[in-house]
Each structure stands twice: as C-alpha cells, then as structure tokens.
Length: 156
Image (cartoon, rainbow, N blue to C red; front, side, top):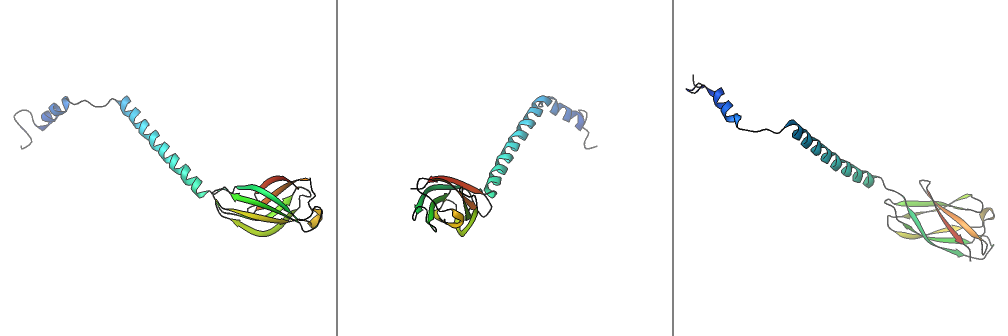
C-alpha cells in the first residue's frame, strides 16, 4: 500500500511529527477568548452610543438677553428675547408664557437652526399682562414639541 512505509506507516509518522509540538493550555485559551469578547463588546457599545446620540437630536435653547420695549403698564408692549440654539437639533419657538398669569400665548413661529441665534418677540398686554417697571418676570419660551425654556428678567 502507498501509505505504508517501512517505519510503520503514516500514522506513526504523524505521531512523531506532532509529539514535539506544544499547545496552549485551556486556561490561557479561555482568558484570551474572554479578553477578545470584552474588547469587541466595548467597541460595539461605543459605536452604538455614538450612533444613538447622532440620531437623537436634543432641543436646547439659551436665552442670552431680554429687551423690554414700550411704556410701563401700557397694552401692546413687547418683550424681545435674544436666543441661541445650543442643542443638536433645529427647533421652533411657537409660544410664550409670562409668570404673571401663566397663560400660554401663541406667537408667530420662530425657527432656530442648530447653533444659530435670533430674536423672539412677545407682545404683552393681553389678559392684563402689561409689564411694569421694576417687576421681575419669569418668561417661558415654548417650542413646538412642548419643551419650556425659562428666563427671569426685571423690567426697566
């Protein structure tokens, strides 16, 4: 037979060939397997976390300043707020609320792109909300998603 040799055949040759080779112990192999699994898990978790924050835009509106326009106590005065969108999504301001009555008032939609600044004009006088000099007001800007951003200002 072709596989048989004078020294005992192919099996004997293979045994001699593998006899000098050393293998990893099962403990070392298990440790390496666990380390690789943990490393891959951390990489996948970091990737998924970054992906989640990319798709989940957050609304964040920073009110940088306020200007009271008109005459103290008069109807149809305005409060002009300078705002900046510091969130990760575009937003639209569509209402405001003054702490005097807490009544929500709709305004013309003001869109604020991510990172952009603009002004929001709130006309007072409705429902007895004319501003008075020296009075501190809590002003809430409300976005189209219902999120409220407060600001406290004192009328001049």
